[in-house]
Every structure is written in C-alpha cells, then in structure tokens.
Amino acid sequence: MLLAIIGNHKFNAVLYATPDREQGGYLREHSPKNQRQHGKFLQVVGEDSALHREVVDWFRSLPVYLDLPALRAAHACWHEPSLRALGPWLDEDKRLLPEAWPLATRKGHEVYSAIEILLKGLEIALPAGHAFHDKEGTRRAHARTRWWQEGRPTYRETAFVPPTAVDELPDERIPPDQLPGYDGSQPLFLGHYWLTDAVPEPMTEHIASGLQRHAGTGQAGGVSVGWRVGVTAGGVCVGVGCHAELIGRQTASESTNR
Image (cartoon, rainbow, N blue to C red):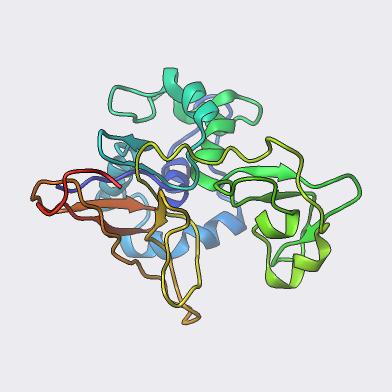
C-alpha cells in the first residue's frame, strides 16, 4: 500500500503553476528567486507542458496529512490548532479544496497560517532585541523550532538555525506552552527536516523522520523506519517534500502499534 502527502516544495510547485484569478499573476510570484528555486523541476518536466500540468495536478490531489488508525504523517509539524483551523477547507480525503489554494497565499488568513505550520514547521518569536542571521545573511527575529521537544528547552536547543548563528540566540529557556509537543497516541512520521546524524535515530519515542536526511555528503536520501502492527502487507510509503521513501512495514510478529 502506497500513501502520499504534500510537502512544502510540492505545495509551492502548485502555487507557481496556478494563476491568481483575484490579484493577477500567479499564486506564487514568478520572481527571479522563485524561478531559480523551481528551475530544475521545470527543466525536467518542461514548463506548461502536458507533463507539467499532469504532475502539478497530482501534487494538488495529495492530502495535507494522514490520520490513520495505526499511524499519522505530516510534512513538518503535527499541530492540533492548525489541523482544526484547516478542517473546513479540506475535503473528506484531507486535500485542500479548490477555493482554499488562493487563501493559502494570503497572509493573515487561517488557511495561510495553518499551512505555514503544517508544511514548514512551528516558528516562535525570539525575545525582544534578539535576532539571528540565516544562511543568506538575512536578519530574523523568529526561528523555526524542534516543536516536539518537551519541557522548556532553551532557544539554542530548540531553534533550527545555521551552526554559525547558534551563539546569536539567547541561552535562556523559552516561555511555557510555546512548544505543542506530541501526545504519542499514534506513531508519527515526518519529512522536511535535513537531519545529519550518521546513524538515524527516532526524534522521540513516537516520532520518526525518514526523509530528506543526509550525513555530511551533500546528498539527499531517506531511511526505512520500522513499524509493526500485526498483519502482513507491502508497507507504507509517504511522499513528502521532494522524496518518497519507505517509512513503514507491517509484519505478523506483533499485534500492537508503537
């Protein structure tokens, strides 16, 4: 059994190819920066070709997340408030409704805010007066987090920033209730995160990321993550971001989820 969900790169590819009927242009601006980001994909499929339209239609058909009896999958973050907010804008298969796509580009709308968190990760504000510089040198006062962490880690412990920027962050604990954590009711599989540990480890007891992982080689790749539920089947593949990798396999050796 193969299952796929949408990631931020596929989401952006749909926006880039979709005209904005309300404001003109496209839902994702065809700026020089965005043209560079989409360049390799467009070179392969041929911009506005039949293949391009077919692939984008498939991207558009992917669910935002999976919430199955035995597992969950999301691209970057499992965030209950965002899932609830997005609910009215999804069909029964958890796919964005046609009218939701333009709203997902309108800052301030609940669809935009939910998609930002679910597909890109949870961001928190740094304390007043603090900021860091990203890999392009842009000064930022908000940082994406290891939202699954429990307790009150420090900003340095939870923020995803370039190694050279860690010392720019305050070495103090974040305020209570900033990170949602995860309830652990079902195994959760994520993509999105470029993890560099040579020997892949689960992110927590209940969360694994088997996609977009590299070990200092500069090459993207995935890993297989075991998942046992008590029946024999072919496995579960979740396509997230730019890669589809095997993330689960069912066997007859156990009868409980973990």
